Length: 452
Image (cartoon, rainbow, N blue to C red; front, side):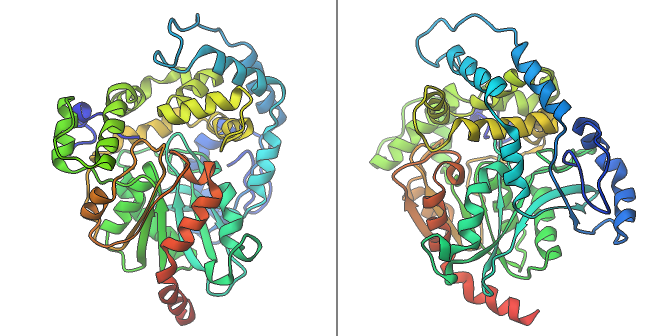
């Protein structure tokens, strides 16, 4: 996600396989359909008879030929020699990726993920010139609180599939009707089933503006927002827009690093004197990440178009996506060694397969090139903020930093387990955090709903 402090000067410091609209389109390979979506937007709108901003139903169904091609490419992988160290210091280890590839090519079943995607309501609508895909799951409970949840990289809407049912149907998942949410989960532009931008400028600020339009378009005059990774950047920018519809936000990867801490990290030295144990721990996590974990961000923020290999080799794409942060990589390695973890082998491959089948390796990388935000620097968010801290995140934000970064902090909790992909890895804890974080906003949302 974020760039190294030393690289921030330039970037950070400062339809599916088939779309169902007026009927089923032909089984054209998704790669050709996906790239044609922007050009065909006007035609699709004419089919629905409701104009470009119509909300059109969307269905996922990749062809057998596309899945067969994926397996063939995995089996044809030309492997490098084994790393020369006994750990992951040189990158994702050969044994991990070979186990992943073996399972992917022989036992993994994309159709199961496809069925889960189609089990929730999917839609497409054009905003600011491009088609935006989103899941929109409404609760049966009348006073449910509307919430938009934004994924990051190398994540996708797959991250949120586990939380939709318990958020929308709390009485079946240990909660009460007062815990209910209406849930909107969009695909970032250039990711998943959303269109690939054909013009410059689709940064987190522009995406934030589009998300406010989206929530109003689907009928919500008051709502809350949640995000981690790029989802946090977009969600914070929604707050900075001061849209009157946005009541508050939640983040599981907050931007809280004080200026003096950022300066010390940029120098690459020892932490400043006088830090509390939590602050020192966060400093050490960030120092490790900046020194050892930012190769992917440096390349994508400067040269995203160079990543041709990711569009040509599914195993190359998987290796690149696994090498996001050390703790997640270690967890995924354990998963492919047969250990039981927050994610399963199928979870991991559902996400990688989505990137492969939609051909979004390079288009998603361009978000790093577009963004000019200092990723971990406080932005002066003026509205209520809730924060959940998972211990294996890139850094576990101390409460002291969080209180300074968010003057209207309404919830702060340190969880005992979980990492970067919080909703995906620890859905039960994540859902509990959403219920606690946004409890105070339910009256305002209910009043807005009754006024419509």
